[in-house]
Image (cartoon, rainbow, N blue to C red; front, top):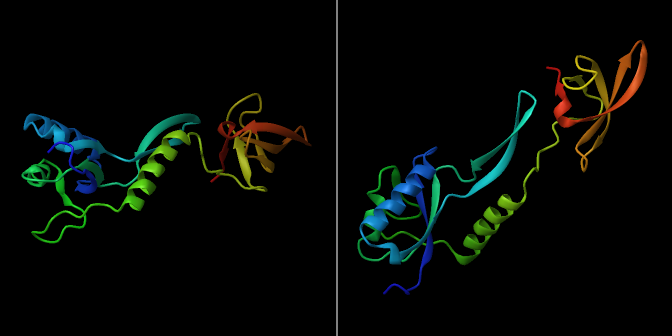
Length: 183
């Protein structure tokens, strides 16, 4: 029975507790000896870079908040076991009292492909600046100066900022981390 076809299902969980619920599901399945029926439990996440106080912070953000993907052969008690786990709301697409609806292959590939892409595609920070915008230099020898963005180099993640020093405009090449928006 263990080699029967496993399909992907989406489990709805309490938002913000996806990883905790994933662990609960894995522990409950193992405790009841149903591990043969469940291949993997997945919380799709993406790596995002946040800038806090001028410092880069890598964080993982849940890509589909409130949803967990489960690859399993849902037979016998397994659907009830998963639904009874703390934090699980139910399966996505199930009709009241009906069976959970598996994802189509195309949806699974798209989501898994997306998950893989997101894991690989690190440091894709949206460019938070526009040409002509006034920014304040927060790092380096020109700390405290205000300047206007003249050019944006996306590949190098640099800005060319025109700063007035002693009454003369001087171009500076600064990274995104060395400036902040003037609000």
